[in-house]
Amino acid sequence: MSDSAQPRSTRRLGALRQLWPFLKPHWRLAAGWLLFLGISSTATLVLPMAARQIIEHGFEHTDPAAINATFLGLFAVALVLAVATAARYFCITLLGERALASLRSQLYAHVIRLDVGFFEKSRVGELNSRLGTDTEVVQALIGSGISVALRSVVMLLGASAMMIWTSPRLAGLTALVIPAVMLPILVFGRRVQKLSRASQDRLADAAAIANETLNAAPAVKAYAREDIESTRYAGAITRALASARSRIGMRAWLTAAVIVLFFGAITLVLWAGARDVLAGTLSAGVLGQFVLYAIFAAGSVAGLSEVWGDVMRAAGAMERIGELFAEHADIASPPQPQVLPRPVSGALSFEHVRFHYPTRPDAPALHDFNLDIQPGETVALVGPSGAGKSTVLALLLRFYDPQSGRITFDGVDLRALALPELRGAIALVPQETAIFAGSAADNIRFGRQDAGDDEVTEAARAAEAHDFIRALPEGYAAELGERGVRLSGGQRQRIAIARAILRDAPLLLLDEATSALDAQSEAAIQQALARLEQGRTTLVIAHRLATVQRADRIVVLDGGRIVAQGTHESLLAEGGLYAELARLQFVA
Image (cartoon, rainbow, N blue to C red; front, side):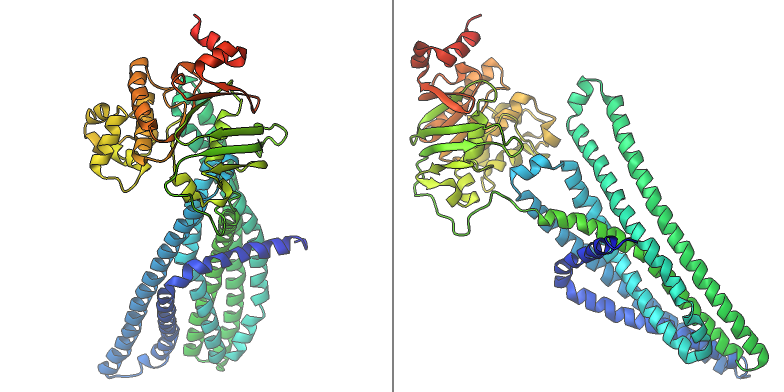
């Protein structure tokens, strides 16, 4: 093992220290576990002494009462052992479940608060693997691994002490072989640790593939890629299996090596003890007692060798979990945020904004962008794909911060506002609507959690969604399925519009809000949106210019710059890019 591997191994084991905050609140369960561990271990260590008494004196008495008392005492010890073991199991298992629940809750709460940039570079399947598989590995360590390890340590120390007390000579011979037993644990254990991390990474890769393809099932079927994707997933599973096989094989060798070495050493020591019995320097009862303590010690060492593999797996899992906890959001609320003036009017100003996405540092999405929007004004952003329209909305939501310049909301810099304050004043209707696996009412209430049933219904009516929701088998209580698979594209978009209506925010962002609607539905939705836009500032993105003609002002973007702005009629008369786009769309 190289010098560089040791610090890495130490760091991985050090990752387990991150479990302490999740265990500390449940110290009473830990104390109960330790108490019952002590009782059960003491009862176990008493058993060989009782066996010695039975061997040496149990059958010397002719009085049946004495024999009855001896065996009743043995049964009483076993009863104490059983109750203490059950109580110990209850305490440590519940401790593991509670710690796991806290770990998962805090990990999810941390991840969901990370900024959009983190999710752009991360795979959801791998995040799910860390929330699921990795935390289960940690639970296995807390719920059983730690219990087995500490019980084995206590029994090893107790049995070793009792072996010394029973026969110092035989105990001394046993001690000579302990270094030979510990060596494979150290050597094989480090290898198991490395293989455990690799195995967990391969499982995360497979989970990521499954998550991507299952969420895109219609596209997979449309392109007849079932066989291709099945082969790709099977390949990932095969790689995970190969990694797991290496880990299992290494753990098996570790266990076998420890058992062979330890029991071989015990056999050698017992051979010496048997010769002492024949020589008359040791009684059969003492040898029997020593044998039982030696078996307890051997079992404890074997248990430690197996648990060591679990410790290494948990260390690798906790290292991966720790990497998530170490992530921080680049976009966060300031320490001392300002508040928006009340009432919020919705005035917006972009001042010399320059922005490029982190993944494309050499390609500015907005360049020296200046735009003032008055309270209550409806402004449409038009232009070819990649012109920067969606970037404007992303910056307003503060998914990103510009590299230079600033954006103000009612005169306050967005970076000076708390994120809940900023985003709570905005209602968004995105091009791709996120539908959750809940009821229709719950999905509309996503816009405002405290909304009542009547408010939800009114928002659905205004969004022209009431009729199709009422036609569902259970109406507003109907489950929409994961990602809204039971709805059409237009129905999903009307759910999103209902959310925005329910939110009743002073700033409304519409990103291709009617792109998935037929002509009849679009006409109805345009009327609903016209009502929704009254009294609030609205930014509209649309490729179909027919949907933006009613805007107070149309801003034409190209290459991240504003190239023209005005009304529909003035821009047509001016010519240029807008007139060209209109000609392509309106002239058959």
